[in-house]
Image 1 (spheres, rainbow, N blue to C red):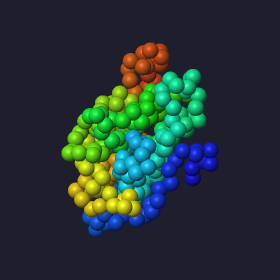
Image 2: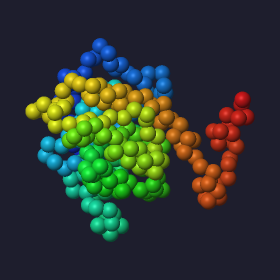
Image 3: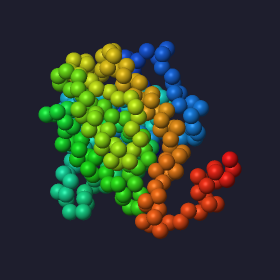
Length: 253
């Protein structure tokens, strides 16, 4: 259950209705056997437009429905009242605090931006800029999986997703190989805001399926995977052979 103090999460309409999906070809549990499934993979989804009819939000909503179908728990953050970076002293704003809490909660994320003048939108970048590498002694993005997507008004492009990949690396995330770029997005949605069956939709299914797998595969090992010599040295944190996973593995081999 989402705590009632969270007021900036979008409600997903018709979460169980997937008219463009062919269920006979979809794995309902794509991550089975890849890691413990004691709790649902937790995925935060961010979109990059405040338009009333936002296609990046539409893609995110379709992705969230698919992730839930694959057994994930999802949250979609609404950035409509998020201030610009450095606009509020010490980032003391409820929208910033809530975004960071959702990121800490997550085990994987989806970033979807429109392409505007060949790049991601300011709304998308603002959300990422409000996610610090360290927050309250924790790291809101480090070690989490990431799927990147974009929508375009014209022909297919990869400028935005290439930028999102660079930002994901900077935020110390594991970006999955698959990605989605929806060209002429206004033609891919019906009047109810749902995506029509197409190869673009099929690729979004691929991305959601793959993100679920990688999240389950990596989430139990993220602390070890991002443990860095330089940070241990700076913090003067010695290796404890009795507790260090790598040392234990070497001694038992």
